[in-house]
Length: 150
Image (tube, rainbow, N blue to C red; front, top):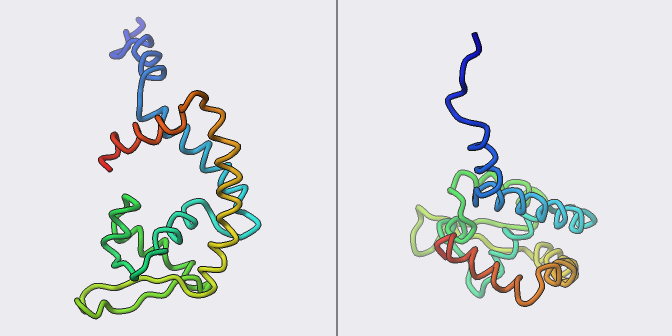
């Protein structure tokens, strides 16, 4: 005797076609692969680029503000920083205002690498943005900011 499924296959198809989370994750992975490939000559990933860029501020940020900007927890941020620190691209030091906290800053090598990465980033955006015609790229960014709470 065959058992009827608890969840009809039509539900699976509906979720596949309409799930925002699934579609955003698929798009994010595809875009991330393109940025990873473009940044490969610099030996950084798209996530490392974003992390380095998040440190490009007038005053070295604390770990909490970087983690918040990148929507990651501090443990994940600490793990992501390690390879960049080993490469001499990032330094951390005690926060002079709060010794329990750490401040992060780009080294000269980190700034130089980021300066080399910016034209790659710009070129890829110039290639990607027109794919979403009629202001679609700007609309998508705006919508994603709304959904991300930012």
